[in-house]
Length: 397
Image (cartoon, rainbow, N blue to C red; front, side, top):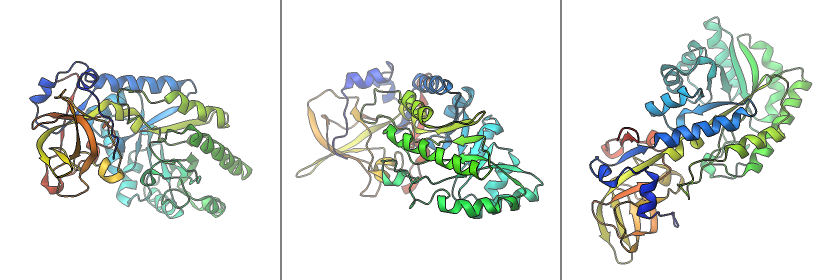
C-alpha cells in the first residue's frame, strides 16, 4: 500500500464544495460524507453516454445500499442489479420497477428465488444447470413462467485484482461454454422458464477498454451459436466493472463514453435487441469519502504510526484487497512526515497505508479517505463490537 496519494489541505477542502473542516470537527467520527452534487452529475453523465445507443443501466446495489443514494438513483430512472433476495426486496421497497430488476448470484436460496418470483422481476441471471432446475420447480409451484438469462463464463481476463475477477474459466461464476449443448437440449424440460438472453460479468475496477472489446467479440460468437440452434435472444446484459480513478480523487467522472462506445463498436446487436449494463462502483465511488480522526501518534524506532478511529470494520477494501484510497490530512498544513496509517481493530491487517507521507499529524486531526462511496459503508461490520459508521450528506450538513 505504498505510494498512496496525499492531497494538500486546500485541495481537500475544495473537494468538499466549501464545507469547512470546522463543521466536520463537530461530528462524531468515523463517518461517510456523500457529495450529492457529485452523485447526480455522475448519474447524468452515465445516462447521457448510454442514451446514444439506447442502452439500459441497472445499478448494482451491492456497491452501496444507502437508502438516500438508492432513492436518488431510482429517481433518475435506473434499474436494479441484485445479488441477494434482500437486495431484491430493498429495490422493490425503494420503488424500482419490477421489470427493471435483475437477480444474479451463484448461490440463490429457495427463499430468495421465491422472493424474486413473487416480485415479478425482469429476469433471473442463472449460473448453473442445477439452479435452472430449482427455479423451474419453484416457479411451477406458483404456476408462473419466469424469465431467465444464462450467465455465461466467457473466459475473458479482466486484468484486475484476482478477488474481483469473475469471468475466467477457473472462477466459480457462470455457465461454461462446454455445458451449453447439453443445457440447450434440456431446455424443453423447463416448462416454467423462458430463456430471454445472455448475461456476462467479468470483474470489477476495469480500466482497460480492450477487455470490453474482447467481451463484445465473445458475445457475438455466443449469439451466433444460439441462433444456429434456432434460439433468438432479445436480451443481452454485459454486466459492469467499469473502474474509477482512485489515485486522483478530484477526477470525479469515470469514462462512460469510452465504455459504452467500445461495446457499440464491437457488438453485433440484433434488431430490437435490448442491451443492458450493471454499473455500481462507477456510479457511486466518487461521491463518497470516509472521514476519520487521529487518536494517537505512536513513534517506533523506524516508523511513525498515525492511529485513527476508523478501521477495517468501516472501510474493508485495503485489508481485503490491499487496495488503496487517496488519503489527506485536512487539518494540517505542516511539514510532511512519513506514517503508517492504521486503525484500532485487533488485527494486523487493519492498515490503510504504510510509509505514507502527509503533513505532520497530531491527535484530533481529521483524515479523509477519498473515493470510498463504493464497497465502503456497505461492507461495514460490528467486528470487535464496534459501532457502524454513520453518514452525512453535502446538502444537509
